[in-house]
Image 1 (spheres, one colour):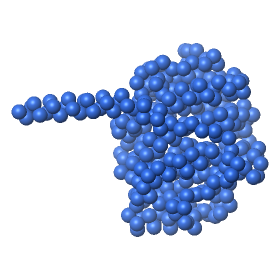
Image 2 (cartoon, helix red, strand yellow; image 1 turned 60 degrees about the vertical axis):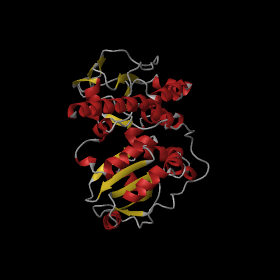
Image 3 (cartoon, helix red, strand yellow; image 1 turned 135 degrees about the vertical axis):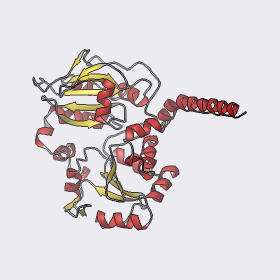
Length: 347
């Protein structure tokens, strides 16, 4: 009788996991927002439930501890950022996300172009703009999670779909960051990370294998971008059917060396640093947890910047210009380069 129950439980569990696995791409597609990422015409404000802070993060963390919170969330945003509006006014307005977040964290807002003084967790004082630059906030919204001991538990660079952000909240609030990386947690928790096998979308400007990308011995003639994708990935499909069909973006990609790799494949790769790995081993080494991810390398194989979050026309075009114009050679961050080109009213 006991064995029969065990078999029944195993079969039931198998069925549940199979149904979940079948629903993962559908969930990802349903929750993947598509929006115009041009700069906004009207400025954003932080939600009224963000903590009213004097921007002394040591005090904020101490108060979170007293309130029995799991930690502190520092949000980096811009007033005219379309990705920030999607995050603040749509995703954080959802009851499941907002209530979970406010119960477990205090949230502090930072304007990456602002000049209010911030005191960091080490006691150093600097204005918001310099703080954001020091933290290499290339894309907004960016979110940094701090545990109660002041340890950085997780950093999200850019905008992610709601299902991925919910997973990040749970990863930190439940203390999983102490035991495993975020990519491993996503795979174990069955958050949409591994999709069903499928063909990758190809583009005419992708270089064919073998992928001998070593630049540690002989410098490349042009910057390199490696795009990690996977089959049945809705975000990957959006990239190919949207931004990559734009004539200006295709022309920019044509000035780079562009390689596409399957996230989970055993395809042999010699990395820009000269290591011999499979595509999946390299993705793990890079700590990737989102597809598509675009990683840009300079002529000597050093990583310049990565886009491992939702990207649409305007942001992708700007990143490509940043690379092609050599903006990374003159400016500390992508945002510093953007400031040099941006009218004051849209900062």
